[in-house]
Length: 308
Image (cartoon, rainbow, N blue to C red; front, side, top):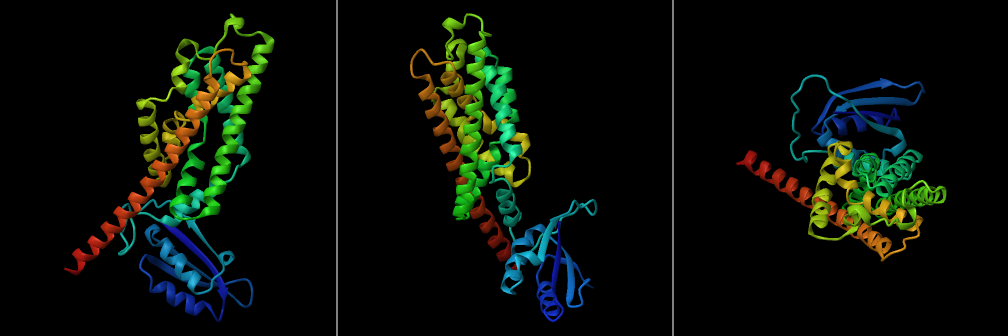
């Protein structure tokens, strides 16, 4: 359930009130006098499935974005959710709002990416898979990946570009932190048998080897990313997404920081990271496209059944 609060001039308020009252999904519409002599406050409960239609109607009426706000409310009772005829099963407006909120490189996001890099980098250096998983669990790269998919599918170029830049900056910060930590460890001679150290020893090379299982994981992760993003369950599947990005980024950072004395492991890790990100974006976007198509078909079929 969403809650709408809107301020309008007194002469415009009746017209807006009538328009809102005619929309399905609007409940408990009320009006109150504002503090200003020429201001009226309208408020209403809005079913989340009707949010897109409400915002479109307000734009048609010339209501400025600064004059209304939609707030998400946690409904305690009743537990039954009423469907709104002609609407999707969830609000695309909410999905777009979440994408916008997660498409910018906030300090908290960068801090978590840096911390994830430290943990995963140490895990690669010490060949400790538990630490690598810990870095994956801490990494928030799911959010900009999903935001970029929303921007691509909804044709919001600015949103997609911002999200991709945020993702690139986060991964760059992670890699730079791993390089710095690795260089410090190597300089301080904290690793046993450092002269023979190679990042690919101990099975670590499998983290950046492109094979069918890695691609299958990336494909599944892209689907899960989009579905969890829409249902606000992103934290529950963060590891599934980061398994395709964090290990490769950490491996690349350690290889560069250690001076990579053998083979082309660093380049292979960078290539793996790029391929996995591309798969996540492609599959996440495709998932959203299919979902939009299926919900539209379900809505049309429901209309036909009701008119039959």
